[in-house]
Image 1 (cartoon, rainbow, N blue to C red):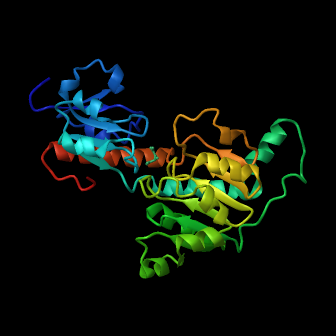
Image 2: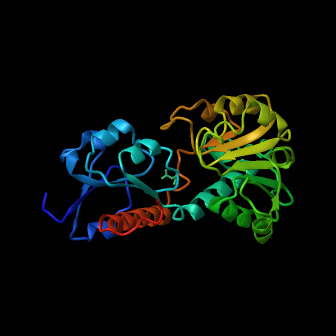
Image 3: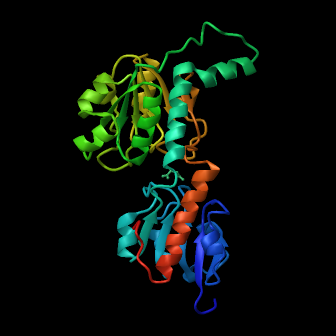
Length: 312
Ligand code: MLT
């Protein structure tokens, strides 16, 4: 390795355009390899760029003694052991803004798909049927959307729901009255959002407080016939409780993009006709992927050159 150069290991698939800041820097040697299949000496790695496929544990960090910074091209840092990173003196940054719009749009597409049975009706036609009666849907107009977790994505989703003339409730312990008013949503308690929503969607990170937030007990508090959506993180909704609530008819339908364990091919929820599942693609648009890759690669480069990391 030449002196004055940095080795950045890009361990997950990332937008080529987004990586420009490091690809075009004469100071950076960009290597694209999975950590456990790496052909370069891992001691040389100064920075690691990942999405959600790579899990960074204490053991992984032990293999990277020279590592200074991890850039997560996305929002959730739940695939990084943050305590271990701190103990190893490694800074972790994310890209909190870049995929907000894409995730809000995917969530809204899920809501519309649930209300009108679009994936199911499309599949039935692919299978040669013409089932007009079976796929009668529901209007979104006038329905109550409950948003649990009112951060950037929740707020973008609220705007889209208002365009469809929905009533929007929000539950978030950090939501102030003035922010709620500015976003034209009604701030409510967890009990109220569970009891009043026709459609309930979660937009929190996965933490010890949000794990299993929707479980057997809280799902029972929801309106009979509710639609449930998770485009945030697997584990916020207890999957087996959701499965049972869909099967017994209390939950009319669900749309799930994220799973407790991924990859989640052949997941039991995918076998239920009332459930729409997608393989963690809410942030998978060319725009979002370019945004998040650019944001982390620029910030990683700045940090290696001695500047502060604003998203640490
Ligand atoms: C995120 O946390 O940003 C999303 O889950 C998208 C991703 O994993 O890339």
